[in-house]
Image (cartoon, rainbow, N blue to C red):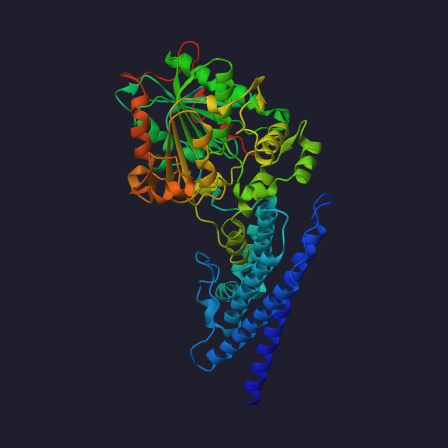
Length: 575
């Protein structure tokens, strides 16, 4: 009887500690918000004390209910109160979290604390929706970082594995940590398995042109006939182009070539200090504008088809608007994959960009210097911190496991620097001031640009779970561009929704030829199609490719092949 009383007292003590921990976490978060509101921020209205008191009482009642439910479970009865993780949260799915009443209680108490913090945030008034979303994001970061799964003393999986391996897992975890310290980043995959040009980015072709910012690759034909009009592809300049050419079975580039297209692709350079003064205009002139000129010269055509992916699509569209202002009609059709032209809603990426932070960047790198790859990678990783940060902390360092070989994660770790002037101009004029959508407001390469004057047919792809380019924002391009648009919505996210091979027949996409309604209205009336959007796009592009002709080898007498694809620029890694 005394032993049972001692156990009850221990559980009560633990419950009280977790109640206090939840209160402290919420208070520290609110103190942080107060200190970091910014000197120019308008003072927010005070928190409703009645709402706060009601939340505190609910939190205390739930913690006590959880404590009592755990005592009941110890006595062999059904647990009357449980706290379940949110859908998709796998941090506590291992049986070790439920085999011991201590860890069973620990993780459920943490989930209650997390819920309480999120509810507290909703009671805090904000000056605007962006400020509120920033609070929600910061609260999620705090909660994710404090998970018991992240710490050796509170992770039963770590303890069990350490006992089973007689401490070897701890040794391996420390070794993994040391190696990652030397690398300056968390290892997400076994990087020794992959080599660019050997087992990824292997589609055959040649570099036919280069300048200081990019190499232009022309891919070798794979069909007996090709369309007269080539396809010029502009990928993002953040990370490397080979997300579009990982393995033959999931290569979008190879698929394009297999459809009878002569494909040219811009391979952006990973800039080092000597390119730290490159501007947005430099990227337009020496990127898409140069690539379009070379492709037209090689294929001896007046117009090409063009495709841009993510920020590559923004750069491409801007370049086409410059050419339009110069009186050049270089492109017969435009394809944009997960691309923003209207930056009204930029998702969580936009939360990192405000006047105060941007002014600081402009002061340091706005006239020259680099935005380091590490900063960009950390930003994108913390958008999905549990999947791309804490998951690897647990597996690599606590459990001492070696990451599995995964081509997409190898690419994800191969980040690139950005020139400071380019990055600052992009963040201010597009993300912060949203000027690209306004006709004539922005001047690029000496021309005032108007996207509404781009009247070629356009294929717009967005993805439904995209956390970088919200699909509703991508849909707004149907209102901005002047040509006839086909808007298609793919399943999944920013990468998996785009790199969805037709041969695997996975996922689905939605189509609706009527883009007159708003985004939600469009989706409500859209038809879902099983499989990949790739074939739908290929069918759309085929009539625009021109008459079939015999293929030719990459390059010509003026633009002779310089080296085999994928070229040397893509192999330059950030340090």
